[in-house]
Image (cartoon, helix red, strand yellow):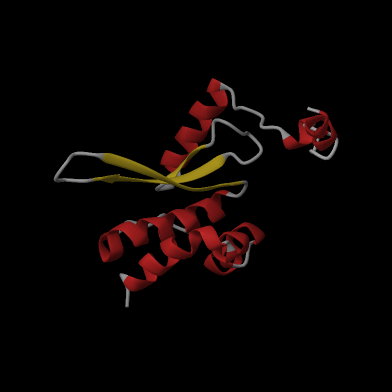
Length: 136
């Protein structure tokens, strides 16, 4: 038990700056309306953390079994970044039949820190490769 207490002293302490800040129901409704108006496909309100309000998820329905699978692709502060990642996620599933969200400034979005970090993250390699393979 003494080792456990010693280990606790090395673990980061939760503070307001590193804990999640859930969204209010009113904020969720406001974001849903904004996302519909902006045609932000695969982007949903991140109800669990208001600091990264946009969550990218894709939904796949297996036509043979009817099984529904949701895949999370990350949470983002910037809507344009979330739409860009949502487009890649959609392309990885649907290829040329994918629908994409309009991006206001593609050059700026591609170089945004959130997009660059997502593209460089090893967890996203398979999604990127699947999207690229469907357009090869």
